[in-house]
Length: 321
Image 1 (tube, helix red, strand yellow):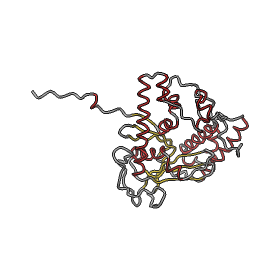
Image 2: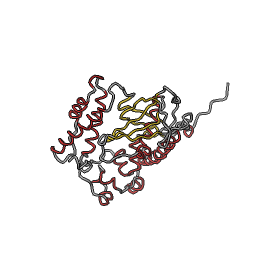
Image 3: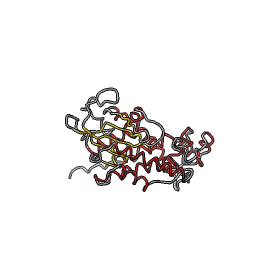
Image 4: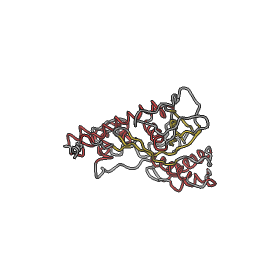
C-alpha cells in the first residue's frame, strides 16, 4: 500500500474572495460609518427622504435602457420621451410643480440625446453585469451600455493604450481572452450616463475607479479588448473619455484590491462581534462635504454638526427650477 495522502490544513485552502462592487468600495473610502449602516447593520437604520436628483438620474437611466430594448423601428426620439414620462420617479421634489418641470426637462434631454444615436447600431450590452477577480476580490458591476467600435488608431495624451500586447498581470485587471486590436477589429467601449449639474472633464473619466473596473471586467467577461471609457453628460450633450492602457487598468484594480482588503477585514471583525467602542474605532465617521447628502445623517451627530443636511431637491440645477 502506498503512503497515506496528507490532508490539507485550513491554511492551505483557497481564501474566499470578498464580493464587492465599485460602489461598495467607494462607500468604504467615503465613510466607514455609513458603510456599516448601508451594508452591515440589520435592520438598516432608517434613511432620510429620497433625493430629487437621484430620481432624475434613475428615471433617465431606465428610459434609455428601455429605449434600446424596443424594436429598431420603434427607437425614435418621441418614443424615448414617452418612456421617460411613464417611468418618471416623483420623489424628493419640493412639490408637484417642480417634479413636472423636471419631468419635462428630462424628457427633452433624453429626446435630444437619442437623436444623436443610430438606432440600428445595436449595443453589445445594456445594463450589462460584468465581473473580474483579483487575488482577494470578486468584483462585479452593471454598466449602462457597452458599445462595439472599430479599434481606434488614436495616439496621444488621453490614456492611449500603447503596447496592446501587454495584458495586466495575473488576475489584477487581467484581460485574458482579449485579442490584440488590429485593422478591421472592434473594441468594446464602456458608456456611463451622467445627469448631474456639474460639467465633466477628461480627469473624471481617467480617475474613475468604477469605470476602470468596468473596463477590466468587460474585457474579462466578454473576452474582447476594452480600454476606452466614456462619460455621456446628458444635460450638456458632451462626452468625455479616456483610453486606458493595460498598466493603468492594473493600477486601478490594484487600488480596488487594497480598498477591498480593508473593508473585508472590517466586515470580518464586525461578524465576530464588536463592542460599541470597538465598532466606533473600526467604523469611524469621516466628516466631509458628503455628509450634507448622507442618507443616514440623522444617526451621525459628527457629520450632522459639521455639515447640516441639504434639502432633498438641493442637488437639482436651479436654472431648471
